[in-house]
Length: 216
View 1 (cartoon, rainbow, N blue to C red):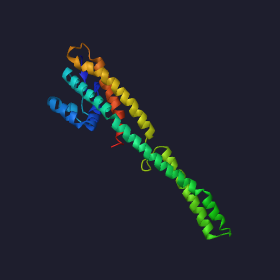
View 2: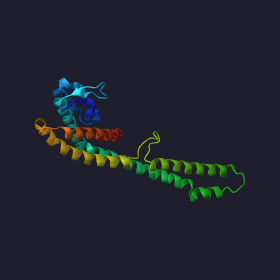
View 3: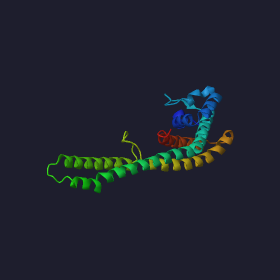
View 4: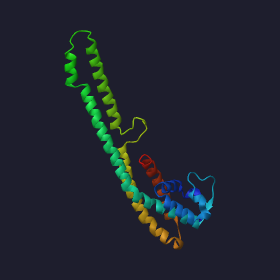
């Protein structure tokens, strides 16, 4: 298998995602491989270390269970994202109503009833109408961007849904490719394809982890 280093087969994101999605399976794998508990460390593994076939097989099983967890949990997170999108749409409608009220004929009519130049009530109504319309417009822009007012670096939630759909399909494909590799692991002359699948699963796990972090 050559001189294979731990960093050549990245599993940091795989391990963290499995821990998040399926702690039971994470703990089971860890308990079954106590001699290699460093492979189950959450976060970065410091230092370089050469790994053998046994460690690679453990990493492959970590990837396998993580892919299963992505597929099995996708529907849950699809629903979470849809619920959040529907909430945004309802709130957006309220903001649209607020904006419309600010410039509505009601305010125009009220202002006209105070035709006297310099009338305090007329000025108050003009200011109130302008503030309501402006506030509604600003809030609507925030909602259209799919942002929470508390976090202006937030991704668009429609994009989250698309990312999760693509990730689910990709996880299914990787899962189908990895399963036979693990079944025949001890008889394979080369593990290059297994390593490639593990590394791709690690990249996928990072993307999925970013998306689902906002949907408890």
